[in-house]
Structure formats: C-alpha cells, structure tokens
Amino acid sequence: MSVIADFDSYLCSVETIGRKVLYVQRLVTLLALLLTVTFTGSGQHPRTYGTKLDDADLRKLQRIADVGSLDHIIATDSDTLGRGQVLLVIARATRTQWCLDVHVYTRHKDSFKSLWSVGEGMEENGICHEAECPDLTAQAVGRGEIALFLPVLRGGTCEDHVKSYRWDGRTFVLKAH
Image (cartoon, rainbow, N blue to C red):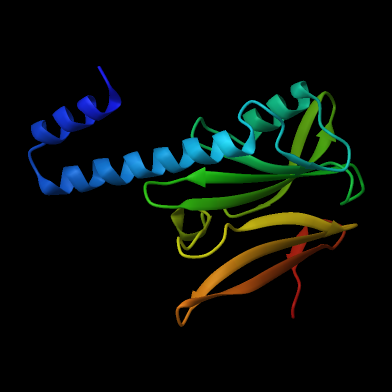
C-alpha cells in the first residue's frame, strides 16, 4: 500500500481535528528530516573540521550523546578546540522544528567523557530554529572557542545572532559582547 493511501486512510479514521493536525505536523517534520538526510549524505560522516573521526569513535559519541533515530549529527571537530576536545553538533527534530544541541567531549580511556553542553533543556527542546530563517549551527572557531550562529526573526527579516563561548580552564563560558 502506498504512503499516500496509508495517510488518507489514517486521516479518515482519526476522530478529532486535533489529532489530524498533530499527525500532519509529525509527517511534515519527518519529511523535512528525510530531505535533510538525503541532501546531506545519509550514511556518510557529518561535516568534519580537523581530523575525521573514525566510525567507532563516531558511534561512541552517538551513544554517549543519546543521538536518536530522528536526530542528525551536523558537524564534528576534533582539532580546533585543542586539549583533545571534540565538538559534536546535533540537530534534534521536534514535532514542529529543528533544535540544536552542542557538546564538547574529551577522550577518556577507550571512550569519551562529557565536558560541556548547551542546548539540552533550553526551551524544553534545545536551541530551536525559527522556520523562516536559515538553519542554526555551531562550530569551533579557534583554540578553546565555540560560536553558535542563531538567525533570529525580527520585523519580518532574519538577523544573525552569534553567541560565543570560551574555555576558562574548567568549562566553556558565555563571552560578554
């Protein structure tokens, strides 16, 4: 049976408009995820800065960061931050939008240890994307320095907003602008 026929029969069997709206929102989110994965190279490594992580290390980071089946690793960077720190940038799909989680790990024995993260728990879903604006992302921009690029919708146009974090010897702290 085709996806369209399944979708049509489901909509006919749903009792309330609210359920129909929720189902359509989930379907649109999943479709957006499929398109994103398709166009970014499903099954390949994410955008890599510095030395490419091998498959075993990438799987360890996915497990530690609890990367689910609807989540997508946007980028990794194992060189720029220095001190053996590895940046992991994850997009998490919610019912209506993409949310960003940014993690920094360090190698610990034969695995990785979490040093810092931002995004989880913020607005319940992470740092979330405004649909009208370009995708948000993060990257290591120098030794001990991370920048989050967050487009914000103001007055009908998207303005670039950058949050910078700097390593203080124990953790990453938000830099005052």
